[in-house]
Image 1 (cartoon, rainbow, N blue to C red):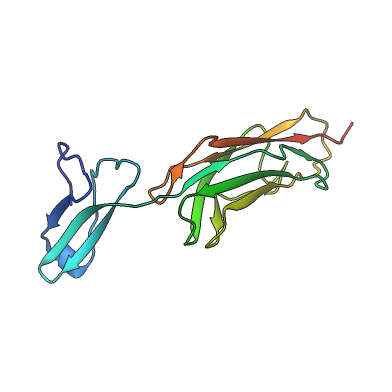
Image 2: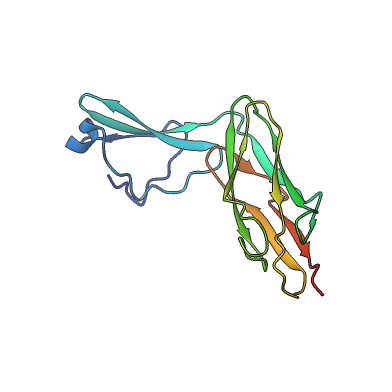
Length: 171
């Protein structure tokens, strides 16, 4: 199913999908323009087809990341932390997605972080911990940057990035 390029989805927007695949419950949606924050799309199935609907999401939570403990050190006994905070609706569990970049190498300079953290229901913070690995190489301080990714289930507030610096212990 491809939507026309002149379509700008808004809350309350519906688009009928009348195909055999939709009746069977399988199809792909392509060319769906990006939705404004606070909107998401869903599909409702009916015996005669399906409807793509854009709905407003009330009270979307906002997430932001802080570097309150922006220092880690080899051999890993001093960790750095990037707390991710959530405000707004905390009634449900919420995975938050992020990218990791910088001069430090995951698996060589620090324990790999993955790309998401999970807020449990009711939680307002979750901590992304950077644990340095002792690599036995003499090198300068290295940087690990965590940057929040946008997602339809939450808004990204400021700050959206946090840095942890890994100090060297080899001389």
